[in-house]
Every structure is written in C-alpha cells, then in structure tokens.
Image (tube, chains in turn blue, orange):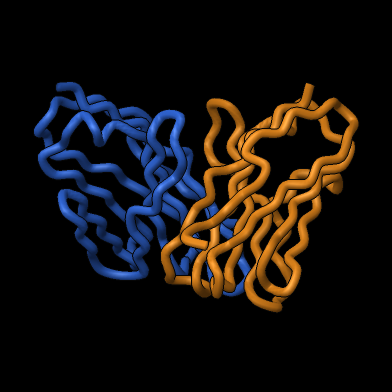
Amino acid sequence: KNEVEQSPQNLTAQEGEFITINCSYSVGISALHWLQQHPGGGIVSLFMLSSGKKKHGRLIATINIQEKHSSLHITASHPRDSAVYICAVKGGGADGLTFGKGTHLIIQP
Amino acid sequence: GAGVSQSPSNKVTEKGKDVELRCDPISGHTALYWYRQSLGQGLEFLIYFQGNSAPDKSGLPSDRFSAERTGGSVSTLTIQRTQQEDSAVYLCASSIWDGDSPLHFGNGTRLTVT
C-alpha cells in the first residue's frame, strides 16, 4: 500500500509569494495527480503527471520518479489560490488512488 | 453529459437504513473511482473500476459497503445498515482510461445519517 506524505500541512503566505507544496510517496506509481479543493467547493484536477514537468498558467508541477517526489509550485500567488491542495497517486494495474492529507493554503492580500 | 454526474446531491437517512448513491461518469471513460470525505478529514479511497477488470475494493471500510458498475458506465454505491460514522461526502471520479489520464470529479453526494 502506498503511503503519501504532503508538506506542509498548512501554509499561510502573502499575495505575490512563490509557493511550493511537496508530495512524497513510498511505492512506484503509474501517475500522480494534483487536485484543488476550495472551501465548500468541489474538487478540480490541476495536473496529472507520470514524468517531468507540466505548467498551466501560474501553476507548475514537477515529478521525480527516482526520488518518488513531486512538487506543486504557484508563482505570483493570489488570494483566490487559497484552497486545499491534494496529491493523489495511482499504482500500477488494478490499484486505486491513494491520497495525501492535503495542504491547506491561505494567501493573504 | 458534460461532466460526472452524481445523485442525489444530498441524502439524509436514519441509522440502520440502506442507501444507494449513483454516479454517471463521462461517456467513454473506462475508469471510475468512488471515494469519500468526512467532515474535516482528507479524501479516502473506496473502490475503483477499470473496464471489465475485477474492481479494486481495497478501500471499502466494511462489508456494509458495496458497489456495482453496470455495462461499464453507471455505478451505484450501496451502504447497508447505515451508521452515523458513514456520514460524509461521497465523491465519484472518472478518467478516460487507466493510469495516466486526467481525473474528472463529480460534485458529490452529502450523506447524513441521523
């Protein structure tokens, strides 16, 4: 069973700061997902990664398969980025998803 | 439809009753996941369907929980003899195939067991 650890659990930053959220997992995977959940809102898939790096707007996600580690970066952070960010990994074959506990991000104006 | 649809959006039931929650994935998506989120808690994987393969049931918390996926499309999650600790938001997600394809999430069913 994969163990997924996220850090930090909570992060408060000022608008404009560069944000990094980390995710580590214990067993080889076929894909890693970064998800976003706003307070009282649904879950949105931000990225799906199996290698390398992806960028959408101010969001960047990287994964290092050898180190079993992924990072989510937010550049020029904005209060609307305040949300819970969740890392989820999928093992091979018929395995389901394993979720991290999430990182609660607050961006203050 | 345009996205993953779940019904009902809210369900209040008495302890001991059975409930059925429905998920309509995006047409053509072969992978379907059920998970739940209890108040103040993280996401908890429940069950995963992939095409015609045997589902991964490793996340189901007890034998009161079961799920079916008929015809590779609609899925129903059934909770028998509901308990108060079953209260949570039950979420469904689908993806076009196994492994490295994006997940699409439904808005969830909020289950309250009184």
